[in-house]
Length: 275
Image (tube, rainbow, N blue to C red):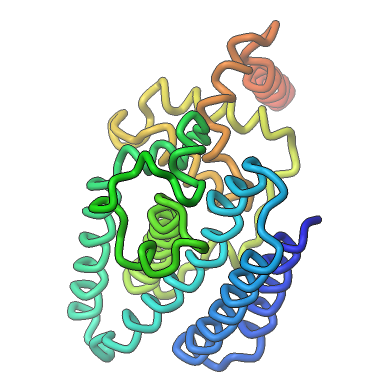
């Protein structure tokens, strides 16, 4: 584990501890913002003092390490603002408040659709341009003010990646909060603590079958949306490999191995019941 990665691990541990001792979401967000700022300062000092051993490590830092911390800072800052301005106990007002925020988030994601796809699909062909510093190919007018003020700690798209990651977390948070308003007595999936314990490829097989059959939202749900839903349901990471896995399924000797096994198990159980 690198020094950079250790900082991320330490931050996540601090955030988990802070969540346990905080009395409410505002208190938690306020403390979390402080932890994220400290982690970012440590990262900056380490970059300035030690730099990077090669271009690959520089890309890794600005594509994954820094955004994993900066996105959390953005997320908790927005959660603090969102909850600070929450309109009391007026259910209709709260739903409108959340719906307006969701609209802004989705507008951003649509505006940066190409970068969102680059992030979610795990592309790398533009990494050297997006995630290295002092890139002379990037016109000055396309760099934001923060990058110009702190060129040693900014790559062209690390801020965009951070925003995308923060927005995904915010959309998930707001969706769950709105669900609580509609179904106050319903247990959340996180409370049920369901974890996928089978092979990950089996779950991809199931997701693709549902997607191709068009069983969700009259066939309008995307494969990424379905992957995200299963991630949330079963506490497993799926989105980043969802397109690559399609090729793995095609190359397998039996691309529907898991589904075939499910069919056989179900048939056997039904036949036994009928006898």
